[in-house]
Length: 374
Image (cartoon, rainbow, N blue to C red; front, side):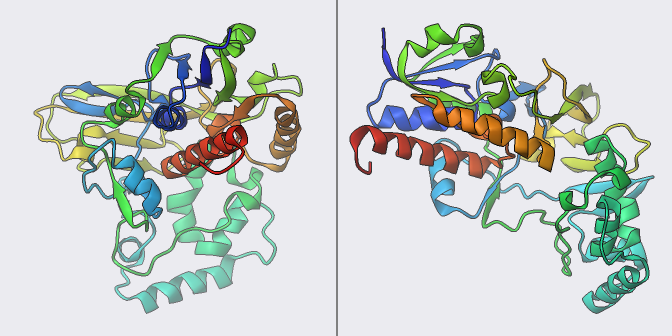
């Protein structure tokens, strides 16, 4: 019954890249997707002439020239630079933490003054052996930066108080002693003109794609269609949660059209006080320097993941990683099934990591088939 060389489960970025490579290599490929659209969480849709990032802000950035050249085949990227703001009780601060942030906090104007302030606060308040996230963060940046820009945002994101979170969650906090608001220090950065969905469409051109199809609902039939399955869904769901469910954080989005040209003056504003229930507000038109008469904003609310929700962020603590290793051992025993992407490998992937991983997986599978490098 095998009709295809590859069945790709999931039409997100990982699946689209893999399908593109299969087509180039002359392999037959079927892509199935449970949702009603392609592009996964980078899906964009047009609203009021604005490309809306349906599942949260996505800014492409990479220092990998191979990945940048690859993605440039399917989209023209603008020069958008990620420079988010933080709103703490009406006070506005630049992110990442840099000289503009420190000037707004303390009135300092030189890197030496900023370093001295941070070091003095660390000496006065840091713990020698941090026992939780709060103590760890203070030992890195001092109490002022922590209280205004880290504490509330982190507690909302994780759904726990900072004193209840393990210290290892924050291994470092980016502190820059320059007047530079560029969040990423990668060599290449931008947003695809016309949206990510158009980019994914070009990747999937010439490949059969079926939407609204759930692999797990009829896995034996689907597996019979292809020699090799590339599964990008939840690894624990694949095995029917036999060891229990892995833990994720999820998100809820509220999107609103506003009858004004410019609502907040920036694409992304983080709300860092705990009492504000959302973590950030996205104004989508600023990703492409829009001049439309109306604007579209999205408020982003973190929430615990429950079955049926979209899992966004794996909770990579010790307990969950031990559970994942048990599932990974099962996955290694599956014949002709490869697991990929953030859900299949239970890890957070940036977009460039996703592309690189999909390219690498295709190369590895082809090498198994042909007995040598592509």
